[in-house]
Image (cartoon, rainbow, N blue to C red; front, side):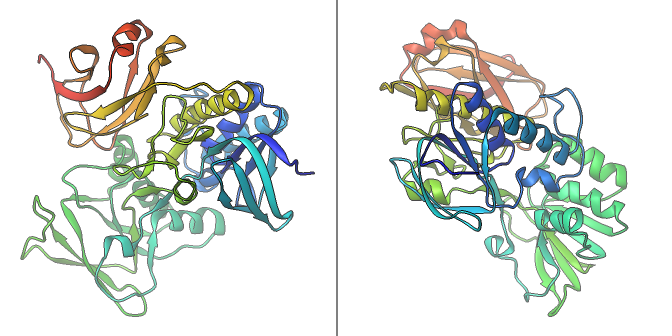
Length: 426
């Protein structure tokens, strides 16, 4: 491949968000689209996700991660998207100059008309949760263990304790059990599940793997190799409950304690970051605070389903292509604020006239579970604009509220919008 000096759209990252962005940018008319990926092959984290659960919404088919990735890779290639693999982006400027180093192409300066950040997320590590104990071998993040088992062909241990009830941890509990390991316990410090209920049923209950809520690891035992972990119950302030300690014999501790958007590039170029979720502020086109720089997927916030990451990629790719090919105009943005029991909402801004083109999908997470009917409401300073009934809300399951175009007038005259969870009948 002969690299061009200028590309209409440069996408950084080739996971589901990046692939979808590149495909949609091409379909919207961008002539030259380049995907830069630091791994040796495209697909991102999908390549190690050999379990099913991908594509149900997009393709109406339940498929494993590598197959889902392959379908988009083939489509991107057929459209003429270029891939620059085994390459690392070092810096991006607000003028969208991309500095990248590559084993195959050396050091390059590439000018982009629009950029899409699709770098995904990182797992929190032991250092970030400050678990006491020595530093023996046998402590892994769940994603690292997933790569070892599914791609490298190594078993990281025989007897496991998993900290965190996120989806990766629960999926790995099942995967390790299928490979012959014993998963002694899944611990969750919160009083509720933090992953999807379907994964709790399919990965833990179906394999008789116990889940203990309001419990965490007090310390790791063992100097050279994990020999056991001491667990403890926590109170409502996450303080250890004295006398509740228990020692579980295990040779491996897996950490599934949350994902953090990978935003080093975004931060370095000056993109405004939402401190609640540590991802960029975006509008309904997934455009960040810097014109012409967009973001898609888990680099914005952590999605439940890869299908939704793909949808976000389509939106970002469309926006990036439009920006690259058309005249830029100043837009007035309306902020969307989190109200009662809303942890965060994405996008955090919409343009005043955004509903002129299409309905707008808001994605949010609640702070606390409510196991009864509730309203998800959108208001401005004076009025209720729209609301949707939900049977329940849980922090581990994303809530979606689509603002219909019929609310255009009410939204247009708003200075600020608020989303909240309210009692049914209220």
